[in-house]
Image (cartoon, rainbow, N blue to C red; front, side, top):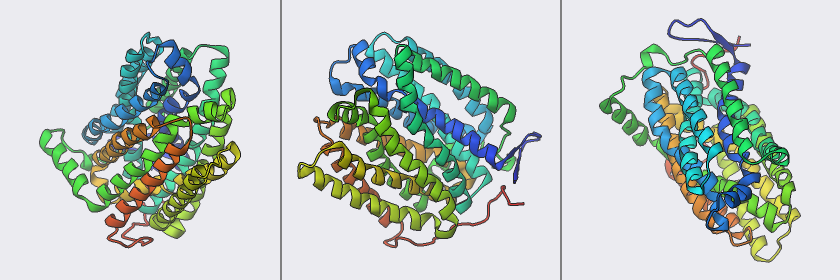
Length: 420
């Protein structure tokens, strides 16, 4: 089992599997903060007097907006001061914002706190990707991120059910209480086990000039900005699903408290394909897997939209088409991220922040627009996903100069993780 050695004079080391576990825990907190809320959205909206039924989606969208926006801050900070102090400081602020959510007595207070809760959680995503890029590159990074995402995808499977279990025995506020306890455990683990992974020679002095230069480099690197915009378009469809899933499953299909089961069925497929990606990426490469999966997603979404427009609208058919389409996310997300980060390892924190900002802000805003079109049917969601998938393919086609399924300039040898 390969070992990961710390930098900056630290003596801690991690196995590859503990690295994956830490990445899962960090990004898992982000997912828990979204998916545990889903069964409670109607109760939160009712208890805090939300003006309109569809306004419950703002509880998810406000978090995603803050999550995307704040990543621009954590990138330069982590490139200047290292990964570990930035993530630990952000988690302290996350605890504070989660407590405010737990105690909120108005819908406006909840939404404001959720923006800042997402903003503090954003450090988990930026630092996790930066750590992965510090230690790996090319197909190895895609493999590591896929391994992390395989377990990470268990969170959407389990989190709504966990949130529902809490609702059976306690008010919705205790969902935030659970997040407080989980965060304290994560902070303790990171304190004792996470070494500093940023090479001293890669530290970038924090200044407006250096930060701007790094952002400009990320924005003008064709592969990075191309796959960033592609991911933003694709994730818009995913965020639309997250925002409207509770209404579609619990209300439109009348599943009520059984809604987490349908959600878990869809999320489970994404977990399986993420695992498959970790095994296939070395053989087939990021481009071939993600491009083929994207075309498959578009085809399934278009067929699904036609089926719904023909009036065939029952739970069995809906899941039969939605689950395979969403499962293809597992062959797209990690590969898009690895492709975007490949040329910018020397500014991994800033590049990760740029990627997260565009995918988070653009994705959440477009996803919210699609979600707010909910009219008692799933038609707006599925048509929206088909449209966003098509836009994603256009971004990829332009980025790759009209050549899909290529091998590109991927590096096959990791920088710091090597097989024994």
